[in-house]
Image: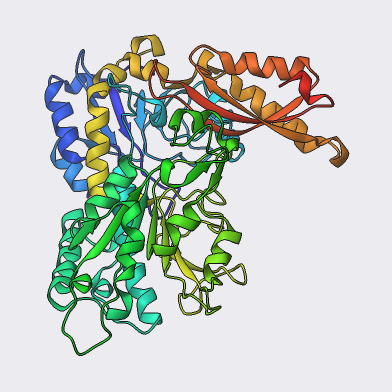
Length: 542
């Protein structure tokens, strides 16, 4: 059935909040118009006429676009996708629902050998499915084609502002942030932005309570996630400052009352920090100025300083940066506790300014250690008490609030679907008629994980990772000796170096499991992996 020109669009049934689709009705219309010429005879035989495309959409009353919108542009509606050679989804389909000998595209979350998705991979292989994973598609510019970082940043920032309003209310303060809802509660991103603008107008006119000023947002990272978050933030009255300016900013405190509005009450401050603001070299004589390349190569030669130089001045930290275990944490639990129990030179308690953390990366137990779990879209917040080290579902007691939703782009389904379809559109016509991965566009070939019941060569390492994990599960406790974390950087996958590395470990009598995997986004970029290694003589491996 591969390459018959009939495209299926799945109903997203695995996750309650997944209302996105791989194509909007308008994009379906463009695809059908570009391949006009389908005949009734072709449709009757379950195929498209030569060079033409058919689109069959599974009905869904949950999808952000109505079934009738697809039908109006020429799509067919049917639960039965057996006529389709290419089937498009967003998230993984439920187990047992894949059709054999078809091509599928969706986020499979299998290329790192993720244990929770290996049953799905087994079904894919058993049914000889050609799996194209969105996460692995890169364009001519070397960047991921289907990436939702900006949408995660936008939705996460909107949710953060809602949480800030609710947290302040529990602390006894009314603020304009209370008029901002979660991103999913708005019919569109434009409507959400309008609510943020209205809150900003209120701040400009009436100001924030003196006790809350100056209010400072700290953004980590400079990528798409940070750009999306800052896009929302800039709708508020704002002023960006450099990290070095933070102490001076807080030296001025608006008067409590009776003197009119202080300018600091009418603006929200922001600071963007990078790696150079988060760590410093242990040997300052050898590295008097920050050397980014040296830090990335030797992070063990640096110590964290974010908790000393940035966090004491922050009201909200918006965490948008990628982090690996080999790097120092942005904030550890002990560092947060020290902030919460700090005293001045006279021994008086210094109130912690930090009110919340919007961890848009949602890296549980990662760069912010106290992010203990992800949250649901309908329950996006939890509270962490840094003194007791406890988490709570309410925002009423002591501590800081966290935003930790791990499917943020789903809160903006219309805009995310449009972005999704625009990214896929250039590949779909060729993919619809591709009988083998070699017939697909080059970008899709590299994104193909399985074909004909086998892993494609680039991804043969997945079975080895899975086998090692199984051996680990079956081993006696005394046999589990993962004592070393080995970091690998280079062309690990496109030149099969990951398999060479695993060969070295096995020849040395070692065992392993994959801890971190970041696949390079172009043929010219490198990949990074961290492998936990266990061996009676680890020095034979490393």
